[in-house]
Image 1: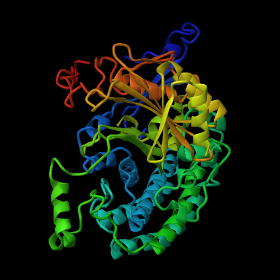
Image 2 (image 1 turned 90 degrees about the vertical axis):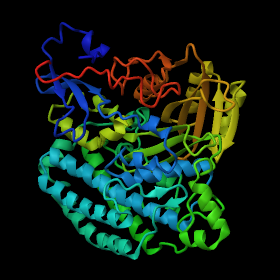
Image 3 (image 1 turned 45 degrees about the vertical axis):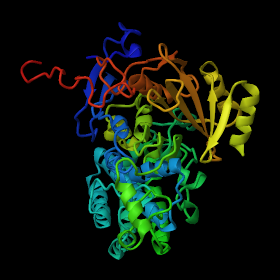
Image 4 (image 1 turned 120 degrees about the vertical axis):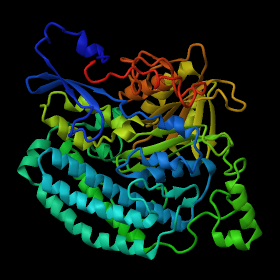
Length: 406
Length: 165
């Protein structure tokens, strides 16, 4: 076993002889994805946990240096595949930050809508799987049925259920159709009832609360020290939410609250996620009712997005732009500079540090993966708890191995 | 604006700090020796308490680049939504930099990833091992001189079959 952590091996070797070593993963139903933990156990207490990651490393950042700005969106789908839409928005948000493109109002609203749908979808899976691991199977199925409806919405929006690749530089793949809007309205009508049911199932459920309260406590100072973000930081009392603090897209237009908790335990993380779904519903409601009319993609002046077919066939500028966009040695103009763009993804701050070199392929496409940073806190959170708490803590952190290893 | 004040204080305090702005993002370039002090200064005296990311760029084939590696530290404030990017240049043969794990314990894995992918050595890091790639791996694949398809690691990997283990 190549795992040699100095602290666990050498210090007090003799005194720690009675400790058990338990291999957890890489394929275990409760890890949900491919990650491995080596646990040191004293009876049922976890003395130490050594995460061993990299099983799913696929060189996404290296691939990012060889695919152009529009092609790479298909790879971002596969990072956090629980909410691929949020990754699409994050990637192209960063690229547009680098290129200095201002999106149209309609596109901003559409991106807000898909981000919030992705947030609900992600939170449903996270709390659902956490419930499943702590024994609440019905809760998980309630959540999964609603996720299925979100997949249906995405399917009618872009044709793909799972790997959406919906955004493009300066716009989106297709405009939103009335059918999609109707589906989102139906979802907005039905989902609050299910959400209330789900809250009634678990919020005061003795078994669930006993298994999650005071388990895996992350204090506010620790949360800042360990660079956490998103619902995990907010459950520890850090009030940072990019949607409020640095409103990107159209988030400044909407009325919503930032959900925080003080306790920092697994239950607080669960609770913050449940509360955030209510806020996402509020944002969705406002966005879908105030969806601006007008073009969805940037115009031909920006030279970032393929022009409409009507423009291509009827205007000479449209024809030229289309031709230049699809030619290998022309394409998108990107400055030789670097920029960082981040969004509040369901899991935390998801950002891309993009280095452009003038061509239509990124020179470097660094992803700031929230799962990676959150999983680093895991040994700290689990130390001193029992073996059965491992799944509760893992579930509350929402570790997606594809994003963890990239 | 909090970022502007911090950058001004930084240039006054540390001579040789260059600052610029791109798309509304403030950036400073510091000398590698003063990097740790700069980050501590920003964290303790200018509210940039949050380390967002540590990453690296290999400028081997970049036009007009004079230095090989650019280390990038992204900092943010907790409440005001201000950000600053701190960059520093490193070169072969010894790309070495002081660790910031004493300032942020979350820097641990981030620095390990930079070591894994670029071979930047973080002096003082408590546990500088590879994180994503196996320990037997010999190169640092995000360097620009590493080919996209690898150097045969995948083909030469010894697979253990059932019964041999």
